[in-house]
Image 1 (cartoon, rainbow, N blue to C red):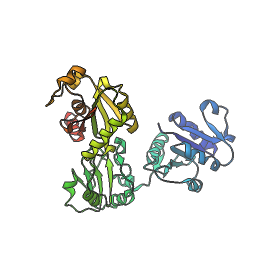
Image 2: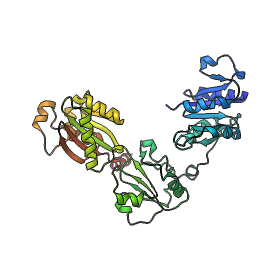
Image 3: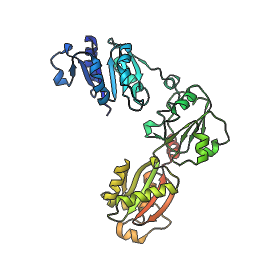
Image 4: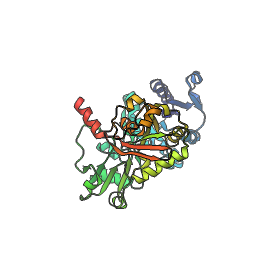
Length: 371
C-alpha cells in the first residue's frame, strides 16, 4: 500500500486533515503543534513546530505521496530545492483549507498525483484540478501505458517526445504483439491519429511520427531503427516458463538455461510472468531462488492436471517418477492458458524447459462472448 501523508499549517487545514484520515485510514497526518487537541498520539497524528519547510525533506524521503493543505505558490517555493527526478519524486497534491479545490502539482503520472487528486476530491466533494494534457484530452498517457497490468517501459529516453506526438495529434503507430487488450478506458473511440497494428511487419510500410511498441520479442536492429527512433517499447508480462529439473539442481544451472534459451528464442526476460511446474517441485530450492531473484511467481499443478494436456512425446520415465507424462510442456500451457508453445521442450543438463505465451486476445474475445 502506498504511503501517503497529509500536511496542514492552518486550523481549518488541521480539522480537514483529521476528517480525511477517518475516511482514508491508510493516510498519515502531520500538522502544527499549536493546533494540538490532545488525542494526536492515540490517532497516530504527528505534530511539528516551526516552518513546514524543515520537515519536508524528511517527508520526501519517507512518503510516496504528500497532500499539502497550503497555498500553491508557497508549496512551489518550498519543494523546488528538493526536486530530483520524475521517476523518484513523490506525488505532490495541494488543496485549499476550505477543501474546495484539489490540485495535482508534481509527479502526476509516474508518481500517481493525478489519481491521488481524484481520490481526495471525491472524498471531499471538491473540484479535482489536473492539467496533464493526456488526462485532459483523454488519450494514452505514454509514461503510464499498461502500468495497471504490470507492463514495463524498456527505456524512458523518448518518452517525452512520444508523449508530445500523442497529445499533439501527430500520427502514432501503436503496435501490440502481446499483452492485455482492454487498456482503452475512455467512453469514446480511440483517437484517429493513433493507428493500431498487430505486428511490426504490419506497420513497416506505413508513415508515422512516433510509435508505441508492445511486445515480448527482442527487436532486430532494423526494427529498433524504424520504430524506436522516436518510440517507446513496453514489455508486457506474458511469457510462462514451464520448468522441470532433477532434485537439487542449482540456481546457477537453472538460470543459465533460462537466459540462454530466451536469447536463442529472441525473447525478453522482462516479459517473463512466472514459472510453472509440478506440485512435487514447489519446494525445489533452485526454482524458488530463481523466482525470487527475478520477482517471478511459481504456479504448480498436480499430475492429474498435467495429464489433461495431450503430448506428442509422453514420457513413461517421467510418469514413473512423478505420475505425469510430462512436466514442463503441460505446465507451461496450463499456466499461460495457451493452445501452443513458443518452445515445446528443451532439455539441457538437469533442466527441461518449455515456453508458452499468454494469449490475451483470445481471452478477451472469450470474455466478450460470455458477457
